[in-house]
Length: 247
Image 1 (tube, one colour):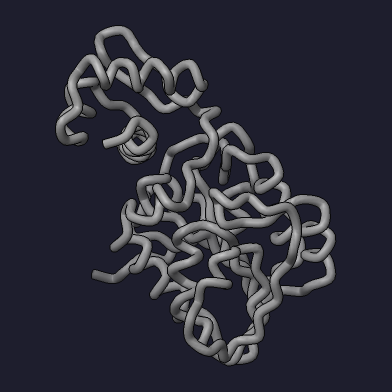
Image 2: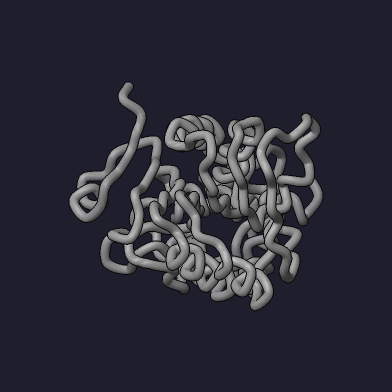
């Protein structure tokens, strides 16, 4: 495995587990020697993405940049599909919705593009749908972040302000009852804040691996949304409504 792919794999593992030992990481990456692994980890630490702890443990930095979509799309895939199915059931013909970037929102997109609705989105994955669209799609425009399949910035925020959304479906990197819904990107956090101002109902699509995780930028309070997830959390559920699978 080439160094770039090894490092992406390490970041994906830490995004999932948060804290791992060197031995645990080596078990997940086939054929990597401990000396090679230590070099990769040192480079990631120099880049400010991880912390090497005493005792041979590794932790993801809270200031680490967001993982690219290409890395995240295979993580918790089944849970994201369950969340997308629940969210799709809330959308009715005639709705005007906002659909955020992110892999869970993309999973929802693939279920609803054939509905008679209006989809306003900053998610560039909309351009990869191959079947004929039934939905009216309005792409917001803005500064492209190709690794996140997203656009954002002043133009995006200005365009958001002209819409009144029946429902907004938003993604996030972390959810905590004290620190709220968080993301590594200030510009993405600001975009989500603008969407909430324009939405009658706000739904956060969030798999349970993001519960009790805190990134450096707060987007909004958990009380400002209904959380759709694969699993119920007692603490988060005491602060806001949650929708989870019945089985």
